[in-house]
Length: 223
Image (cartoon, rainbow, N blue to C red; front, side, top):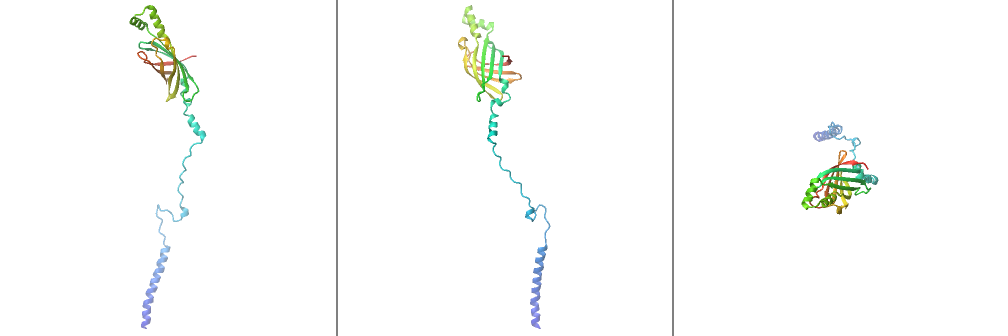
């Protein structure tokens, strides 16, 4: 009898422990915690793939690259045609009298220097300036008349120019008529800036004394 009671004391606790283990595992398997907002779903198939990173942009084809290079040429500048044609204007310069500038700007179809220009500058001293010059040199009437003719003799130049930022810069390549002018002033450069329907010109000269260049507003002239 005592052995039976002793064996029951050992068996029952073991049965209770096994039952507790069985039921606890069942409860754990059956328990599903509620989904928390912001957490990814347990099903991998439900996960949306992230947006793919676009590949780097490829360089344009050669034809487009050539078109971009061509757009940099001066003739593609919308202001290019404004400079072409005949221009003329007059201005009074100190100690030189009234000066007239004639300019013929042409397209020479060259890429680097697309403009060729032909200029003629002539000045007519006033009567007071001629008398003052004649008295200073103690000239006779014949000498004064010869000095007036030399002062009025035109100086012509051939120029080559470029277009940048809406302004044409012309550089003198060769000048003519310097030997006929008393203290002639050869043209060195000339810039053109559109001004409404006119053209603002500024030129520089080589030489000293009277060779200070000038500024002038020019209008279109008929051929």
